[in-house]
Length: 297
Length: 205
Image (cartoon, rainbow over all chains, first blue to last red):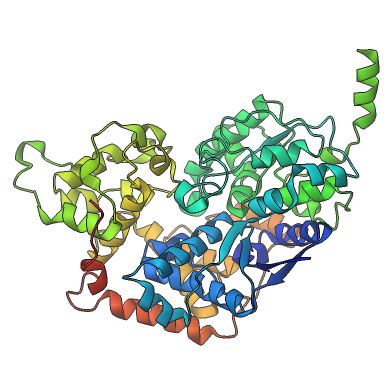
């Protein structure tokens, strides 16, 4: 069993609790042991790094230091914002000028740790082929939109995973469930980030554009791997509809929920009922339709 | 916002500015040749006073006030599109971040409500060690004088059981508070503007 330190971050304790739950289930199913970092703290997110880079590095770095003390070499965070902070901490630790103040603050160095997203962990440690073999409830006949958001593969020098402009890892994993996955041109476009609260119209405009394109491509759901993208597209979908005078009704499940579903896990356990826009359409079994269509054609 | 007066641009020139930005960000802003890729990639250009290409040019021209008081630097979401597409490999998003930090230090933040939101966020982290989502919003609404922000979301989130009413707390909160104190102390040491070690850092240009 592979042992990976798990840094879930504050969102997964609150509004994205179902992301936490489904992540644990899917990792367990593939023999990945997630060890939650004991007494972990917030990475400070955008507010910390726009205040002082050392604050961000030390807040995120404390978690890496605890993981290192636990003997873990790999840390996984399902939140791309947290992951960026963790990577920032690693960079700070390697910076000759900042190494000393960093180590003084967090108590040790964090050299040689590998930090990955849930997507990278699933793609590299499990992979589309093993996933395909494990599928119990194929999503054949469903059209899923892969949306990565801005930070999952960027900036490229930091993320060191997939392509910064046209990532395909999520596409490949979703295809392995049997679903149709159209080429989504807005894969890495920004959803409006933290402006949901302070500049709600930005989210109306930017997330609105993403929902619009997803709908035009015949998507039944937008699959995400970021709690903030999920909140903007799902929880704020009514606000977006009001802003645009539109009537989008697109569920926005997490990657872990969709994969869990394909593995045959119960929707309730995966927290699908926690999503604002109901994803029940994904529960329809269309494998028969497809076969019937195939024999007719 | 005050526009830069291009007729008297030499008078408002601060020749130290580009050096400071380059040192603090570790990026060679001088390499920017105004291709406009960053501006074209930026989904926030519609909301900016100066598109990001112009911010880069204004830094080169030493226009400290115009840059540090701009709306643009505080409306940037750090989405990395500019950085990804810069043909000169300038980490443009990092430059914007550096400008935000500088504008905080010089008290020229153009978007007080965004700063208020960030401050409340950090206060929550300093107090509890983690962010208390449900507690953060009412305080922000009060401070930003926008009492109804996201109130429309509450009934549904309540029904879904997604609102938490008690903050999750880190046991070693003292350690987190200490990180905040040390960073704050070092940040305002010496010249009161920047951390000494950051000043002596060399850029790779």
